[in-house]
Image (cartoon, rainbow, N blue to C red):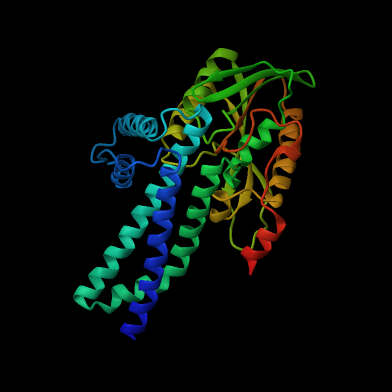
Length: 348
């Protein structure tokens, strides 16, 4: 039984190693491909972030925020080494591809560590745990690998549902302004004043949402916030299903969520949340038609939320990854969706 499990895990590890190498090579293709760049990319794949200690929780959010800002600075410096002459949007895509490649490398090394440990000690429990969890691990691992390819090509991903929904709310004659790697526009809608905010596209950006939201709350005396984001569906739920609720829908470490929650508590601001459901692998791979239709439904829900709002300025926020999504989408056909035949292959 040990020999059979070893053989199965070894094949999976070889497959994972090849995906890590291909993701690394995808990044290197953005450069001139010389040996020095290849070595620097290999070294950077081991990049890590040490979270602050939580022994004394006071001020931990500020500490975490500082560490995240330092990490972003390191990524930008690395991309300037890899592709110094690339456009601003291409550099944003390289950063996101690099982050995914680091994640793939970390998971691969952890699986390899447990595999080698089990071989060295003959521990059957470790082997069985790896064997039982490998199908779930590989499911997400392959999705991350496909996500790296999508980011490198500048294709929209499922997590771009929030930015896409808000992009469809904007019009060409809107005056676009930039703020903290995000864009916003002011416009009237059925007698109400809207401020529409989303990460800047079409490069792969998440934007500094908390900083931008808090700035706009002060600048425009916001009375209500409507947030749109992707959300992980439960198994059995339909992809693209739209749900509504209240609260701040932002994933990640929770740092940005804390900053916004602190702000709205002081200002007594109302918050509506609208989410487009999808699987975790769908969120990081190329967007399909089901998710796109969910965005169209979410747009109608946003309009309905605006209609039932009384007086006051409304901030509409599209949360997510802006890769492959222009700032304004008046013609939905410009969004490069996954072909249906690819969906069928994925289901088989």
